[in-house]
Amino acid sequence: MLRAGVQRQPRGDLFILYPDPPLPALPLVVTEVGASHWRGDGAYARSASRILAVELVLAGTVRLEQDGRHVEVGPGQAFLLKRGSDHRYSAVGGAVRKRFVGFDGPFAQQLIGLLPDRVAPRDPRALERLIGRIETLFRQRRPGWQLDAAALGYRLLAELGAAGAGRTAAPPTQHPALDEALRLIHTRALQPCPVAWLARQTGTSPTHLTRLFRQALGVPPQRYAQRCLMDQARFLLSGSDLTCQEVAARLGFADPLYFSAVFKRHVGESPQAYRRRFGG
Image (cartoon, rainbow, N blue to C red; front, side, top):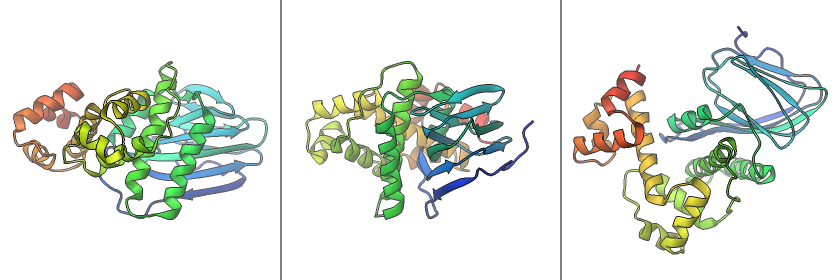
């Protein structure tokens, strides 16, 4: 069993940016972004870790031990730190440079939990640019920046998810219409977002916007929006004292039975069964 906490601090430069509380109650939240440069040996070790993060190696090699699994992660590859794991990661044979993003929320935990410990993204530079954009949001802290960071976090995990599942990830669109549509969906989480309305707001056509969603996230806009809504439902069922009827009403469902049917279609079990398993 690994010892809790930081076992040995890496020597080198480190910065971490944290958001000002409170964080928005979203199914995915970016909790921190940072970079580190280990000039020599260095290691972190945690037991039953609360960390949920993606770390992109830019230079050098990192050895990751996580719940009995061992991988080495080289430049252009990412490793994932999974909540609840016992893990240790260390530099191998010299200096290491890396960037990282921390996450929270039920959807982020589910996605990261499904991915392998090491992922080789199709375009590491595009992934690094995404992390850089998240860092810029953290530094500037303009109105709505946390929602924008969440949208970029979704894109980052979607890219890793495609690569981790053995599929060729679609080239990062860097399309402002997609970024704006994601921001609108997250901002209007409890309001309908028809494809035609999203297309008008983002200056594109419904067909083109649907194509962008399918390329980047694998689903059309309406399915993505409903999935986000169900992730919010899971968040409320597992982390609040609201009744199932109150959760349904909070998410805009006038009929609790219809909410239960939609939830079961997306999650695979009823809201009541989900709460029994995860509500604590």
